[in-house]
Figure 1 (cartoon, rainbow, N blue to C red):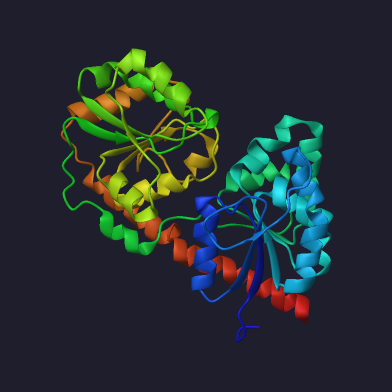
Figure 2 (cartoon, rainbow, N blue to C red):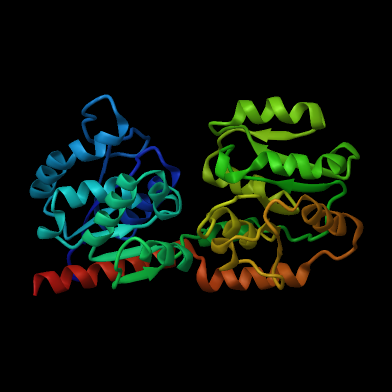
Length: 358
């Protein structure tokens, strides 16, 4: 097995930046990879046919086509991402009869989808039971998955940041005046970006902080409409950027801020820690695995006064947080280097494929 390229059939959203990044790294590390997707994207992939007018049925009706692709590609490993979607398709296709199934859990898989209905909970459980190995980026996600199905074989492997981008860390740790804050999560209900504007409006209007948001997300228009009466045109926005330019933009800021109400291990938090930003995030389960009071500022969910105090202390203080920044870099080097974590993932896949061929 070790002398031959590992053949991996990846089923994931081809339009997702995370999919593109993941598949590109698998190929860079020598895997023969076929990406299969119902969604379109820039990365090379096989586009599954969308059957029917209801999106929820696409994953069900794609099972026969996936079964045919498995016969043609003859993968060593079948790797669905988003268990409640592609994992369900793979389960319906009875894919594990052909090759081990390594399912990649995403936070919304078990944090949001099962709560939609009994059907959503059951299909997620069915997909979980079909996997030979479950990979997740946090213990929290695994614990939530265990509430849906009996899970015996799992591994927590975060995603993280590519080692080359550590070079973007600022050498000068002087905190800017006004304080530069970036909130890099798209405008979606789960990320609660408007809470940040409500909490920090007095400081924004006083010119103490400059806050940067993405320009995109399904609630982007709603966000701008509601933010304007509070802070006028004081907010900054950035359009979608390629990875190097996004990380360069992030590195120009002093503070990373997330108000997410549900999350696993946020990639953006790990990136911020690597780049030397002061991390601030709502104190929720997935975030706690990376952020504590020794290496950042967790605040209680929906606590506007608590968030104001954290930001206010940084604005008024003279601590450049050099020790915190160095501590965070060491944490990322130990747990959050993307290439090393993908190499670990490939190693697990190789072991499963070898066992199947014995």
